[in-house]
Length: 143
Image 1 (tube, rainbow, N blue to C red):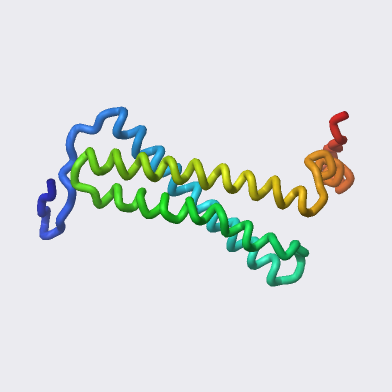
Image 2 (cartoon, one colour):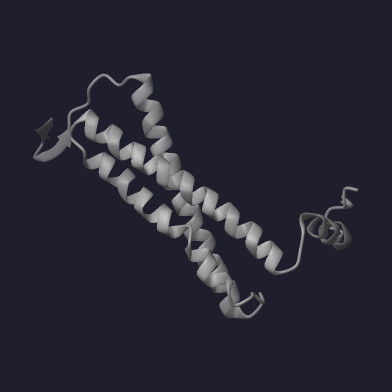
C-alpha cells in the first residue's frame, strides 16, 4: 500500500516480523557483496593501469565473471524496495540471495585460479609476508 504524506508517496509501514527483518538484512548483505566486488574490480583496474601490478592477461576477464551474478543480485535487491507486496519481496530476495551466493563462489574460484596462474600458494604468501617484516610478526609456512 502506498500513502501520500506531505505530497510524498511512501510505502506504509506495517508491523515488521523478525523473519522479514532477517530477509531484508540478507538482502543488504547481497548488495554489500556486489559493492565489494565492484570496489575490488575498480581498485584492480586502477593499480594495473598505474603499472605497479603485473597481472597475467587472463586476470581481467576472470575478475569480471563474478559480476554476472552480483549485478543481477543487486538489481533484485533494489527491486525489493519497490515491491508493494510481501510475496513479491520474498521472491525477489530469494533470487538475490541465490545470485549473491553464486557470485561469492565465483569470486572465490577466480581467486584460487589466479593464485595458481601466478604460480603461488597460500604458503608462499605467508612466507612473503613474514619476510617483509611488517610489525615484527614473523609468519612461517605451515609444514
